[in-house]
Length: 124
Image (cartoon, rainbow, N blue to C red; front, side, top):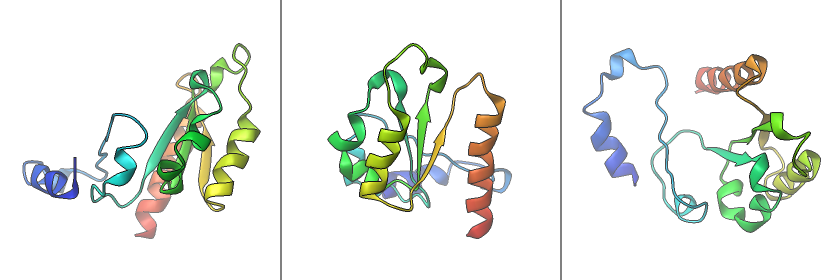
């Protein structure tokens, strides 16, 4: 996936009816960081069950992040995962990165993500 492909795809969308468009660039955390897909912001997800090694293991991806979402935080009581260590690791790479903890069962955490996106959209 690259910026040209995204641009081409946007021509087939009803852009007048869209406020926000998400481009999901899946795969591993190495390849997507190497490609500019033409987005205004980059949100990277790291999942509690995957462990604390992802930010250190894939620094390029997290260095490009505008927002890091630590997902599945409802599992913290059951899984060994250090949220503060993860945040510290992220801020070594990018001191001003925004980090939110979310889980699908907590409407407030999802609202914080939406509020962040809306705030950034208005700042453009």
